[in-house]
Length: 560
Image (tube, rainbow, N blue to C red; front, side):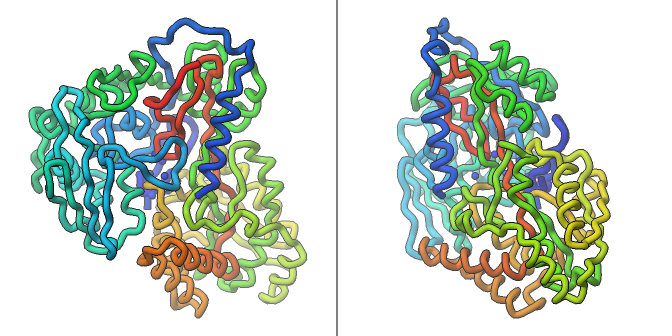
């Protein structure tokens, strides 16, 4: 579950209802600890006055922006908002345990084995799973679903780029073989864009898993108004601009929801979502701004969930344009001129500082206490060492009107400008439309920019290798390649070795070394990780699982 990400660029939040751009990029302990403690204290903390027993809730109502949702067909989707709907309707091969995103647990598969070389995955499927038509699930359904997702050539078909083969190897067993090691493969299989569908139901409405699917499949329109999954709910209907409704699946193999229906009511404005929540007309408000979330703290019967987005907001420097920015010492000056703790006063509860390109909740992220902190003396010394003791001019581009998960880009850009001006770096802010900004970033035309990178799947491999020299971000966008310096080559080598290392401890050592060196010599300033802020009714909702992919898993809601 979603900025400039593979999901239309990488998650790029604009004002309510704006379209995100799909990547270039869609999930240890920090998120686990934060979310677990959050649910045990915030959600379960209703007072006795709040806990007056309400009448039985038949329909759960969720206020959410429809946003970029263009289809409810999991094989053809790859947008930011749609995972909350898909997770309610479909199962995936594996999933996350509650709000923890650092390990996976059974879902469609109840156990699995991985070969010692990391190339073969054998999944034993849960024999008790049935689809919403009452028919038992089979290995053929898994094979059909994955083949259709691959051959439909939708925006997330690249998820299976490394798959060599998918075969039935037992009555309730499939085997997936990869062409090369993907240390995050199990995490990728949690994606709602790799949901399992009933082959029978989809075929009956024009679907196919054949290689010709992109040209011959006609099931998308049917799947936009119906469902073929085994999740806790069945799609009743989707009305653009109004609502999407689901009802309880009578054949669901897991614990049934304590309500009959869920209505996802499309509400674009955060203020309207707040008002509906306060009145009790909805039980969840999915798109709160930091100001609104802060105003709701302590209000009777209202709670706020702060869900780490696992996205990175950073200042990127192109090493080949502005002459002053070709010198690593000026990069150092920029990094140490920024008051990161002061910035936290801007985004309030809507984010937290980060230590490197990997947000704290991802495996192999640097410990937060290793983050860079403002040091004006060091910044000025670095400028002098670079030959610019009085500073230099630079142009800093950002997307006008863009929000980093409801934190205004303009607010962050202005703050950075003020910080850099204090050491003599004269920043000329250049706000442009988000589409223009993204196009120019991808083409490597901006000397410096502030941007956001989010996840297509919960995995460190969707971040570190891309920010390493020559990676998808550092290379074409910032012109930072391994041949830039000996240190750049070393970082690239460390990142590559880490992606091929199966041993978790060795993998972490390599990732930490790469990030530490990147912090020291890289053309980046890591600004903060935004939060997804969700309001809920504490007099109705006892607990719920959350994560940065599908935000709220409505199938896990427990009522007071």
